[in-house]
Length: 259
Image (cartoon, rainbow, N blue to C red):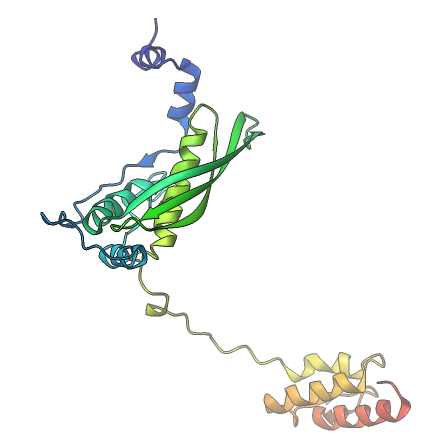
């Protein structure tokens, strides 16, 4: 006996296997859209200003769009928040109506490629480049392009790619803040790097392959760490201040042309 889901899938013209595949896909937590509180234009309509001024006013009206949607379920590994096309349209639709701006796709170039998912399932990749015409209240316009891509195992690849393209246009072309905290609002204070012990330099200092230039660098590191007076065992087995050891061997190698 078929399940309710299988009968619903059949009624929609989709195979039941596709319905089950969609049910097993990572869940998308619905985004709770809210009224952005943008008024409708008055009875006289929007002010007849050039398109770049009208679009700037749209940008000023859309002050920020938070990341209210979740891919996966909150708290689960691999889940993350994002701003979907619905949130972008929810904000930009009223703002564009208020200022008399139209955003119209006038040309779409699409490319398709058959691919496989990480589990080996056949899928189709869609990439679109869409030319949009942003028309102002006076009839003049700007043309911009936006790219979108998607991968889908059914017939939704083109729609997803177009939605991604439109979302990118609105968010990037509108320079929309995310409402996320400013990066400078928190910081990580660097801890002091541990001081390298003087004795750890001895083998490198005594190695005849160590150049005079490297020995000068070691001398500087020891001086910075205030360890030039640390006593170490030199190449002959005697005790010597490491600063004196570096200077002595450095002079010998510089004279001998080791550098």
